[in-house]
View 1 (tube, rainbow, N blue to C red):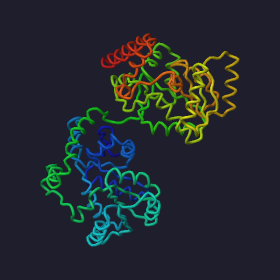
View 2 (view 1 turned 30 degrees about the vertical axis):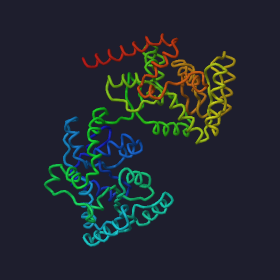
View 3 (view 1 turned 180 degrees about the vertical axis):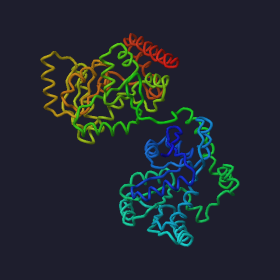
View 4 (view 1 turned 90 degrees about the vertical axis):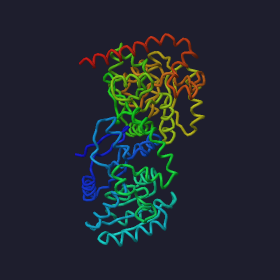
Length: 488
């Protein structure tokens, strides 16, 4: 099995050139679509800013080490030895040789028309054993794309090269690979320009020294911003977990480490399944309560999805192990759920807060999401008889998403004890209804980004001061657990 090294959460296959070629040959033989990506520091930086690209890189079938910076980072920070650098242009040329020997069918996509036509002519002349099944320049519109994809599928290439620059080429492949049915496709960046003679490669000695980047800078000073981005790459490597994991264990609680888009995909799957699911947005105060309340802790441990709501959870997880890369405040996740429900036509129900607050929250939400189907709402104040009628109402409304705002611990217990209602998504939202109603204002954006929203809320709502003790208790439990773990 291929050894994968992780750089800032991005997988890199530890293969030399021959092993990379053998892997691709197996892909072609399988006839199943596969995608390859050249990984270099610049791409890691882009993936940090572009979650779609990040997801593509994590799901790619083959990520080969294209940049000397990747080799350096793995050696210095991870003490891992990458076998060799496999540059995109070298792999491109070696694959042309392999295609020539195997009689593979080839499709070339990308670059300017005049460059591409020159590349096609060179390929046919130098590699007569392969078949150029088709080609198309990189200048096409979104409206043209379906026709182009169909053209590629009809051509039935064995391998495909896409030279449109990153991340455009990776996104094109990820979005269309299955429809095209190409056994192996990879982005090649400016390789067409090299083959056509428009760009000159560094001398072989310079390449072996890993200084090709310097040679290219001398020829093209406009590449300076790329060079200046290297310190940023180092910073990303230092701040990131070596290996990305989807879930992080925290006192037996499986906390999701996915981004908002991935969480919404999971939520959508929950609704489509029709099976009840409990979603918890966990913060330090709730965790402290769970440490003291065995029933609550057990419920959170059995939750179907736990989202890292508070900065305390991020800190606590970091003290005990892997870094949580994606902190998603509960109020933001709840808002995203409403947007999902509006798009998909899902029915939502609000339960919790005072009668006037939940009513105002529902009204404001319907104004913000005019296409949202609010199946009903009810305050969090009810006796046993009212509760029975309310549950009957919720059942009759065929609710897809139930938002419960009764405070951390109470709301999760209520959801758990009434999971026989069969609601696909039931989520505790704490004081979210207070914010949606306009009663409470969220902290300014810059305060949210610094993770000190809890302090802002304490200043605005001094009555929350009694909750500070739970934060210190949470910190004590985390540090005590860390000390015990280090001794063992």
